[in-house]
Length: 282
Image (cartoon, rainbow, N blue to C red; front, side):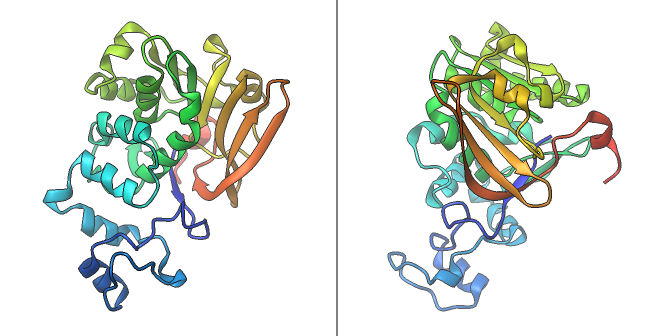
C-alpha cells in the first residue's frame, strides 16, 4: 500500500544531491562544467535528480545490482549506518518488484493501486527506526505491501523478536509471503517470527503489541489512536501525516506514556484508507 518520494522542498539530507554523481553524467544532466569531486556544489545544484534521468543511469548493466543500489544510497546519505546498509544488501529489492527495473530509486507498482516505496525512503525509515529494531524487539509494518520493509525489520529484530506486516488486500498479502519465501528472510517466516496478516492498518495489530517500532507506509490525516496505543513506552513510530501536504513524522512514546512528535521531511504518500477506496480507479 505504500508509495513515496521525498518532496523537492526537503532538506539536502533527504533529497538526493547531485554532488556524488560521476562528473560526466553530472555535466550532461545540468549543462554545467564538471567540478572536482571534493568541491561542494552550489546550493542551486543540490536538488533531487529527476527519476527519468536516474532510470537512464541505473539501467546500465554494470550497476544493475542490489549492492550497487546500496552504495548509491550511501553516497547520498540516505544510508548512514552499517546496520542499515547490511540489511538492505541482504534483502534483495528485485525479489519484491514484480516488473520493471528494481534498482531505480523510484516507487514501483505492485498491483491493486499499490506500490513499493522508493529505496531512499526505505533507507530513511530504517535509519529512523534502527535503534528500535534491536534483536528481540517487536516491529509492526502498516501497509506492508510487497513485504520488503517488513523483511528488513525481521532481519534486524532476529528470530528472538517479532516482525508483523499488515495489509488490507489479501492478494497483496499472499504475494508478499511469496516474495519473502525467496529472500534471506525465509527462515524467519517459517519459524513465525515474521508474519503477514490481512487487517485494517488504521487499527494496527493488537495480537503482537506492544511494539518497539511501528512504520506506516501510507499517509493518515492524523495519527491513528490505536497505533499510539500499541506503541510501547520507549518505542518509536514513523508515519506520514497529512492530506495534500504531508510530513513524515517521528513519534516517540516516552517512558511515562507521553508523546513527542517531530517532522523529519516533506513527503508524498498514498492515503491510509479503506480497501474499497484503494481499489477504486485512480
